Length: 229
Image 1 (cartoon, one colour):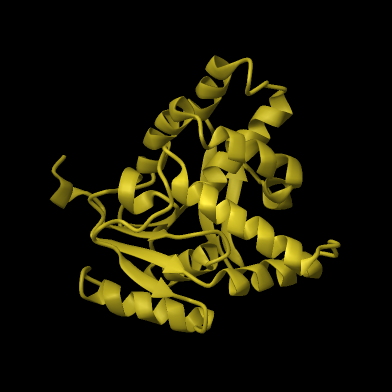
Image 2 (tube, rainbow, N blue to C red):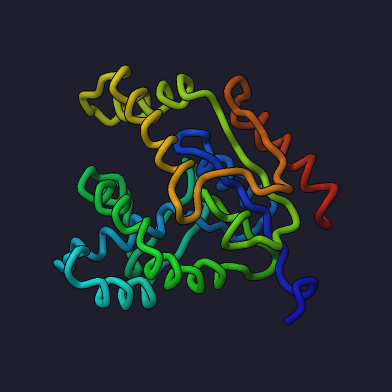
């Protein structure tokens, strides 16, 4: 199938805490498009591996087979992108500390990333796809018609994460979140496999001082010049 015959794709890449999930879900609802949370793909692999007792350091083959057949589905919810694993909403299980640690180990394995490419690209269906992640515009959908790199200051992203965790009753320290986010940003930028950087043809949107609706409208305005919407 020629690229021009495929469903259109709008990629939303950027660092953790920039608001990619909320923005992508709102865009999918506004446009009536499908949605993909690629970060949740790796978390889902991690969760499924933990549930099945797969040792990432020992049984890479089992991990790759798991990644190839992962039963995942995504939908735009009121608070962000909702993830179904094995037909059930994964919810907060995807955000547990154990899953976060495992996901960071899984995401750097080239063989796992390769296995998940087909799964992610299979989400490209009519009428279109909003793809949220860190390498959507650079690796997964390099031919996307519109690529957005959503960023915000580390201070703002740490504050957002702090409020989110406190609302769930978690005991967190803002300064520690700030330091952890700085370290994660550095790892994501400098990693050899799919670093978190803007695609050469991406439009950079800064959400530091913009409300959610403002960010969404900015991207809708950009999309209106690229898509038949």
